[in-house]
Amino acid sequence: MLYQFLFSAVLRRTDAESIHRISFGALRGLAAVPGACEAARAVLAPRRPELAVRAFGRELPGPLGLAAGFDKNAEGVPGLTALGFGHVEVGTVTAHPQPGNPRPRLFRLTADSAIVNRMGFNNHGSVVAADHLRALRTRRGGERPVIGANIGKTKAVPEAEAAADYAESARRLAPFADYLVVNVSSPNTPGLRDLQAVERLRPLLREVRTALDGAGRGTLPLLVKIAPDLADEDVDAVADLAVELGLDGVVATNTTISREGLRSPADEIAAAGAGGLSGAPLRRRSLEVLRRLRARAGDRLLLIAVGGISTPEDAWARIRAGATLVQGYTGLVYGGPLWPHRMHRGLARLVRAAGYASVADAVGADAPLPAAPSR
Image (cartoon, rainbow, N blue to C red):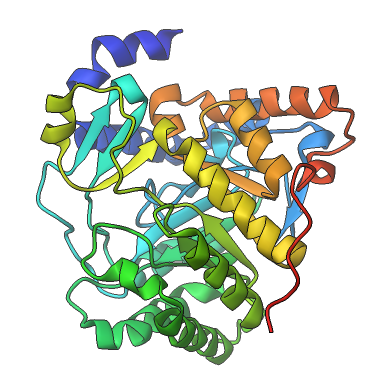
């Protein structure tokens, strides 16, 4: 394929963050051309009835969405949905603008179809992101895209003030999002993953929920995104907490700090350095975490699977394990702009081959019965 040739000959030899910036600029350019997004969407967006799925009170054309991290400032949603994504999760957005970590901070491990990033929540802040979403929501014509807003902690904010920092972003973004994700699992903000501990996560999520109530969006679906590096018992504890607090779901999983089992040369791995690893090496553990969440909570939580999803078979395995929606990021980097279209087309084929009328009918087909609710 042309993209794979271009990737091998040019893109893999160019700074990863520069390529991201150029690609994102191209998407925004597409959106600036009258009728271009509509024309692309007519060809690339999923239209097969067996792919339709309902989540967040909305009917989505397909289960595959774009994970947070690609569109940090909510600037590229029209172009991204034109590629065929059924939903787009923007962010991670912090309450205050921040530049992120020093460059270089984004690296490819091509032998593993993986990426290492230590971006550090670089974004323009929740005021700017809210302005972009407001403008998008007030545009006339076209389909209304399903948008999630992923929020994180501002690096300069002390951990003792983290809950208030998250709540500030929640208030600003809530009027324009279809769902909100509390990200406590990036490895690139010091101390952030400590917030996954239940005794610290509980008051944080309660404050965010209070902020949504105050913004008049008390029913806005609220989810939490967790790391694959959590111990099994901690995954169970988060599932129990989410059910206890009446959260709507869990996003599983973020990037990993593990470097086990990689095929890339040791010097490439060392050169990439610290940061979160995404892509194919995450496939096994992310699926394990998903299965554990489903076994613990059953259908009381909506599960979004992310991490190591690069083929239709990967997506199908997550759906059968209990995921209502699946997301990709690294798959797009290695697969190119037609990747979402190919993924949905392949997934439709798998749904039909398995004898299901709809992908929604297969959610949790391979999942064990849930455990009894914790007392």
